[in-house]
Length: 102
Image 1 (cartoon, rainbow, N blue to C red):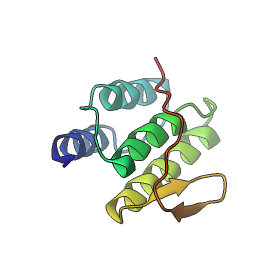
Image 2: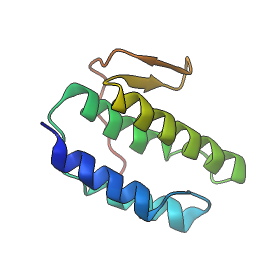
Image 3: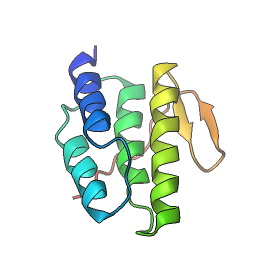
Image 4: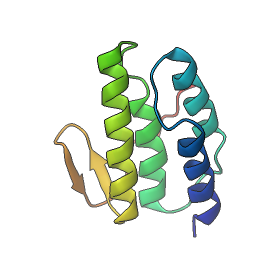
């Protein structure tokens, strides 16, 4: 159902495999914001969470957390789950407030 979104998200990850500074962060955020809006709940969670994770602090530790959380979200989505960074666990997809960064 969300093949176009998945292909676009994979292209974003391939274009910016590692977020290491403000430039790579912004390139990845812009790319993800421009992906097609997904329809499925897990895909919506994936897009929302990945964009949320890119709002971490602009330090090397912050970028490291972003990279790990984005990869965990991708892996969870591939199992039809959602990654919850607060509990550091994969969980069933649920409705979450959708807020995309500008």
